[in-house]
View 1 (cartoon, helix red, strand yellow):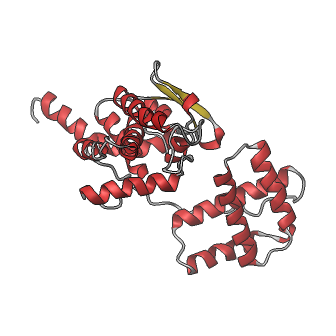
View 2 (spheres, helix red, strand yellow):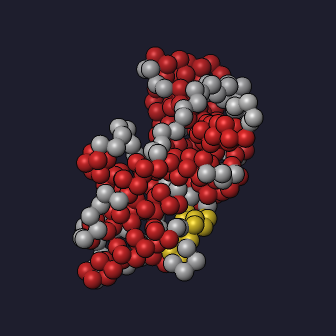
View 3 (cartoon, one colour):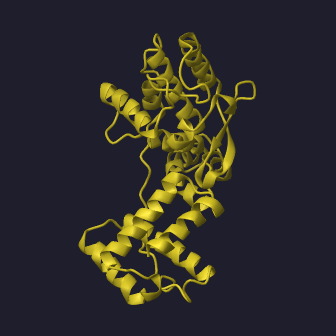
Length: 290
């Protein structure tokens, strides 16, 4: 099994050009399946093997979402094995994905976002950097993994766009608002005075190295705790807020899909629940019997 997983790893890395993080998740799912099912040869895996594995996951109280992801990893793995002739048929092909409960995204209202992004004291390198991070996340709606991957050369300060590397290693241009541009310039002024650290990365930690996603999470947690804005806020909440506020102010779903870098429109449609407030306002103003 290890040999086939290694071949699959090369396929994901070289042919599909998936990010290291995505590849790690696939491999973790496959190794978990192999260990719990005592599978040594993928050719011996049949429909019943997969069903027993799913029953095992249910016994462990694994969430439906995690089960769906693990099943998707198996599906992709066996599709690869069939394609390259290692097995004749996929045992996962006849198994349906568990129906997921649609989880509404948590978002902040506009006043809470303003309170959060203006919280850092910009009279220091760290404060200016944190303000630039918060402004950029809300201004662009990009993922934290995309934010920490931005290089200085990826920023077009005149055009007001940033080149980001999204899921599937797909590049896109994300519009950056004037306030975020100003915040980044202010942060870079502090950074240039230091004349140290990574010369390519845009956002650096106190040691001059490129910030990680976890570090950004800790930065936001610190301001959330200080402000007591809302519980369970994460960097992704600013992305949800970005999409929600755009739709509430009249942006069309297709445009928001492009801005978020979603491959499928169905992924973006989860945000349509937030337009109810705007639609009700329009209804109250326009309907003669409202």
